[in-house]
Length: 109
Image (cartoon, rainbow, N blue to C red; front, side, top):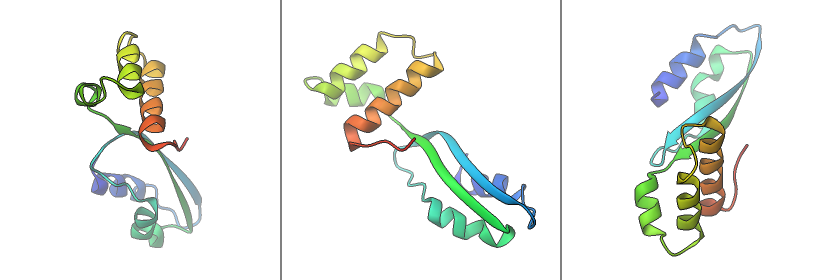
């Protein structure tokens, strides 16, 4: 979904009498900065109360990342995880969360 699609989807829920906590899940392109404060400001006038929590994970190009990190822990981690079944949602999530920790030093869950 694009940024505009996310706003449109949330705005479909609007009811000024209800309180909302929206949790965003899925993968996001590396080049997109999903700022929940800006997102909240863009739609808050349509809601009595809204809290948006970003639980998205960065989508990595595994081939490039592995090639760039062939001799370090990131490359070894990718190689090991690729030997597993990446079609399994739990394994894929573990790969992305692990990469987030290894590349950024933290993860938001």
